Length: 443
Image (cartoon, rainbow, N blue to C red; front, side):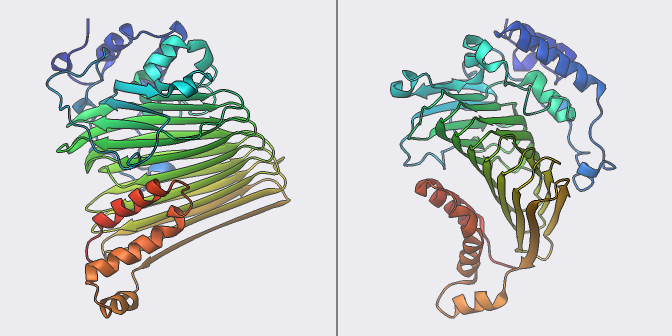
């Protein structure tokens, strides 16, 4: 018996019990969910007195305003069938693609060439049911902590509709895979992304989160887990473009092993409020990570990112660059930390956050930090915040550009350092155009 949206009154113990009873997955996974729900029930929502939440107010968030996804496949006729257009996949040759709507898997496709080589890609719901033993050592065990806070516990209990990419040892996928997570009006998304690259494997993953046309509200409580094995290479691009009434909460963590490489690019332009914990753990000597972020806010949006570059062993390198541009009365909060353990000698860590204020009422809080226990390291961090240079606007206007066109050029140039790091030209151009379209005349 499926759970119909009309019979639900919110996300409570009865709804979760019905949801779990209908899951078709291994017993260990269901037990993992039950434990997570028990943890959730015993926790309180984060408060403003907690260091991590001092600058992010969620008192207006009401969990009982949202519903759990239905456990059965298919799309109810009452839900809109139109999906948001893809920005990242436009004009890109894909090795595979998957789509979900309100945490319900819709479609999934993988080129037979890669399936024959043992690659798995598609709905986490399906692949967990078919390959549970393969996923068990990874799913919510070594990366994202289900007991980190109440949002992590809720996600661990009711995740649905996420994606898996598994690439066996030595397999190099020469075309990107793409995942679209869509949300309808008032919908909920609990998607979980799990990427596993074994030794010597290589892949590019393009992930998008977007509301369907016309939707304005919703709730996302998700997680991303990236496992990059020895000598593996992963390029992961994540675009968050929800409608401006969506509450967005996420826990994201990558484990990068010996001589492996991870390039992780984040672009955040949507939501009413975003609170994301993004952690990278370097676990093997010679590991390298490059984390890039592009944040653009307008209206009264509030985007908060807490990042951690954790060097557990020596001879590793991490490079972090986040850039934010803010319009109207919007606000960004970035709190970053480079942590170097005692045995992580020869660490090379870099961290930078730049903010461009396009309004006198916008606010950017930038809090870099270092926690170093080793004594032979090179770690640097920096942060800048400033307004658009009026001389630059004047210079462009003298050459025939309008004030808005001049501002758009300046903002695009501000982000160019991050965009240039993206190796797929069409993705780089799509993100640049998406930001430029949102820029209004500088106040």
